[in-house]
Amino acid sequence: MSTFVFPARTATAEIELGTTLQPRFGPDGLIPCITCDHVTNEVLMFAFMNAEALAHTIKTGRATYWSRSRQKLWVKGEESGNAQLVKELLVDCDQDVVQLKVENVGGAACHNGFKSCFYRKLAAGARPDDPASLKLEFAARRIFDPATVYAKKPGAA
Image (cartoon, rainbow, N blue to C red):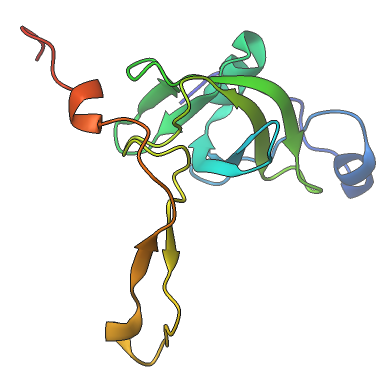
């Protein structure tokens, strides 16, 4: 984890109504991050940041997350070219969630090739007492083919 330290959290009034960034990272060192299109406000993705990812995002203006599966920093678009340029960084009332408003360069935020990671919706008629009725429908079209974009390069491990 990072050695970068944000200002210590103070009194509730300062956290909720003050003007100092005092993010609350969970016991795992992570803070949830909701990323939206800066023009349409469409939710593009949900990810986590550690202190280093948040600091890197602030410093570079490029959305940077902590990959829980790979256990490393992940600058959005470093592989796919579908970068996220931060236009605004917001925090919720108690500073335990970050929201990024971004320019979604390349048009796709999802590694499955869609504009948003939220590309499926629950079909009409779904009932929690009937597992067979819990069907998903596609609500968007693919922007790119992930097999092409993420193809291993010759000689790459």
